[in-house]
Length: 93
Image (cartoon, rainbow, N blue to C red; front, side, top):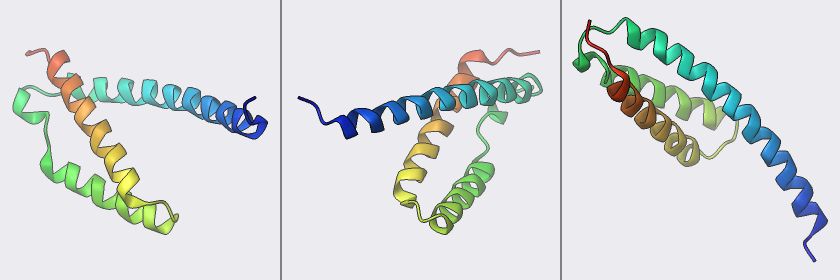
């Protein structure tokens, strides 16, 4: 028999995952807007911006008492996934 508390918490996690999917859809739409304004593939990776984003996430994680190792791994993964997405969907003008 499974622990009822675990089942209840997993359902909450599933609901959060559903909300994250909606957020990623919105993020993808915004990335598409930015991508459409890029003329060259070398504009896709902005190392300076990535550094600023990761620094901000680390600071906010610490402020909110979230393990920054977790959030930095997540954001690095998100950034890498969207860089890959941009390269796959780049259309030269």
